[in-house]
Length: 99
Image (cartoon, rainbow, N blue to C red):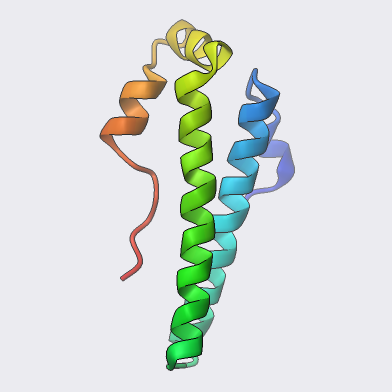
């Protein structure tokens, strides 16, 4: 999906780490979901696996949002760039919905 170099542009190192963890978790969840769908696998264990991966992504995404809400550096950089991190994060979620 994305290589680690794509995360080296943020001013806040904590934000970079939270973003990388979030992206990695989302990628793992999507890969597993695609594998289950393409092989037409079913069952309680498969569903439980996906729910666990979804929960892991949700937890990491929540940490990213919390960081942005609390980090003055992230908020400052956002305002310098003419963006509103907090407003953007709370108005639209970048999370993809499992269908």
